[in-house]
Image (cartoon, rainbow, N blue to C red):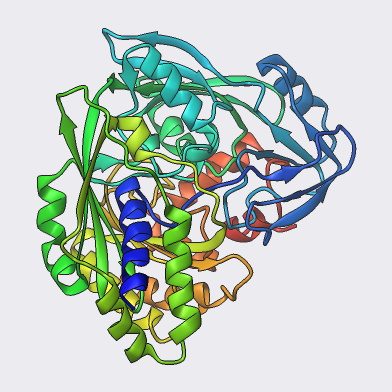
Length: 459
């Protein structure tokens, strides 16, 4: 038992210190060809056979493609969404060649990038210019346009999702026209286009507010989950970034905070995320039928006195790439309901002895994008994961009702089964978005079956 304890702590503590436990992405799989192609998202639960995969080299080629395509067109990026936002039997359009930093202004703290730029590239190129995004999600291979379009977010009580920093967008409409929206001349259109699910057109250019490049200090520690839940609001108020991961059937949560760091020292403990997940899976496999024994064993194996630190550039600490595949649901509830909701989610989750993936809890500032899950309200974000190849329907059938109980709004890229009527009630500008979508795409060429269902559009 003593050997097992050392093994668990060595792998687990390093993984926690290195960052965000469960999430890592591999690129979506699609044949690099201009003829019919099979595509699937990285967890494998969303697939399609498209007529073609197009990889235009510039905005003009995007416009030509849209103007000439005969059927539906859907954009594809990293393929990490669990909802079927991408699948089409028409044309898949990749913006991987429409990527890079176009311009930046250090005095105005503004940068313009191509929509296909992956977040890791965005951060690296901005850093070379002495700039950074204000906040980042915990995955760095998403395309910028895809991340914005699905309301991808990081954590921070006073930090909104990425799309809130967008000050202008260029969209290629379904008719092949280049349209520019900015916050001064087109506030409503920009508010709609910031989170559009790819339904208004193809985002080829994004202008964003940025900040001077900065360093962060990360602290990671373990605490009993009840203690963590009691302290969470305070920790969120007193740190630039705060989140925690609950480790199912252990009674413990891992807290992660980031604060500004004025020094230049780089300290990055080696990541052993995969070992940590294997530890949690093994504990489940050994003792999954005996939850009380599983908790008792976890209490023996976990040393709550462990604390580790890291210092580095903000983007190297906030975002990572991770190989473990899974399926996920995530909802965003009003901040004052966050702790009550996550308690309810934990109780519901632990009715299933097979669960082992950590649950993620974050804070997000409100914004004004029409389809933003954070529209006009500060929120808490709760994400629940199931390992790839294991049952995941309960994420919607059992966890979904808990989210609904607390007025949760779904993450557009994560598993959910909210109806059109429910979405219209949850999003005050939902109908306004639908009207704008119809005006830009009356034939529904940017839609697929999933979006038609969400928007209540007849086939």
